[in-house]
Length: 628
Image (cartoon, rainbow, N blue to C red):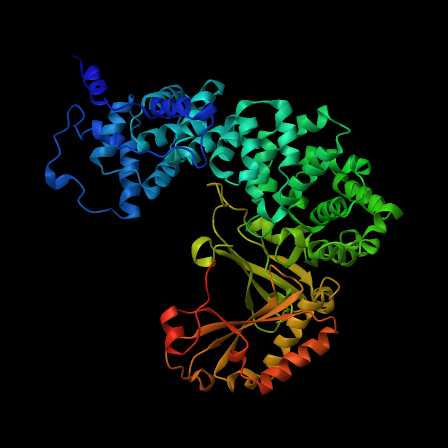
């Protein structure tokens, strides 16, 4: 037996591709289950750490006994890939000998190492051949991951069927989808949705997409219009990609139900609660915007359609839609078209006449009345800085954002894009954007998962004579979901007088607010002025705003521990939540009543415990909240 044959004999376990294909064929109707297929076996068992020709066998002492550090793992993976072997068995052996395992960290490092691997034009054919052997015959997750990462760079259309099947294995979904994204976004989206679209109302659509039943895709796409807040930006983008939305719209130019659904998907892609990367990643965004806006006059004038079109206008004015690669003047042309339509009597009268319906209906009507002119108010003298406080359609439950535009481009999605811009209460009410005599470092946005996880966006603001300077930007070095370097922000200089005027205008503009939100601001201001209203009860102010799920209620949170009022708490604190429904009186009256109640009654008697620990609550004599 030759050395090459000996290498091949080492790989005796079933190939992961064959394993996934078998599971798919055995699955009901040939449709993969939610979250794909688990790897219920240990495919690594057929490979042992045999030496390569010319190497000494590894001793027991040489084999890793403890989990290596990320730096050690990174070095081991680079060693395994350098030089890139000619056959998969060699890579299997190297990974096993160097302790490269099927762990999230190792798989991520493999992808990163392969992405940075220098490959000359003469090496690419051999690397592609190796990648195909790894993906079609590989028996271990690390080795197949290396093959998928190579195909992300070097794959062709003939690899699509193999990538689509491998992507159904849970451990391989992400690298397979990454490779498919570079080759066939529609196939990538179908595989991604089969794993991530877990809501029952989306399963019929996934089935139609997997079966490529075009007529059923349209029917299920329109039928699956769940509540906007239940559709994540990523799912919205993948649905549009998988359904080939521009083609669907092109074949059905008068289909108003499909047109409305397309507009709703665009709105969700730019949703800011998590990270609005999906709108910018959607390759057909410009085409779908064109189709929806230019045909918007076909839509029946309903509150839902009005909210969708107004949301698109807000996005085109100050959201991530601004950052798309628009032909000169085209974005403003579409905005003007939306303005003309929404100011027609049949549309403009909707929010005023829609006085019936449920709470959600009323919330949207009031939001349209507040927001209807905002995206169309272009500054008469455009400057380098513009601030727009945006409260989005309440049906989507997006946070209120302080959108900062520099030279017309929104800063947060341009430079950070891992979470929304901070609220006006944080940036404007507390004067953080003012330029004082000393440099001031300001956090403009934080990752939705917290700064400790995925970072934040900072800038230092300082006054320099008759100018204000923004400089020393701090943010993650890469854009989320990819290894692409994040854009490098430059220093910005503003005329100080114009800068101060824009900050003052933004701080005093409350046109975006509503009663419960205003009540919350006034209560917070009262507690800042009179902290004794809480300290007398051994309490300390916490988060105060409108309720996320019920925007017509104000929420006051506070911490409590014996001795907290004097600055010497006896143990850890409990968190309390006090909900104040809007009673229809002016916000000033509601805030005054709340502050008077705090002055006279212990808030622990009407607030509810919402944080801390069960043990601490029981020790202090409070009931722990029941979890649904």
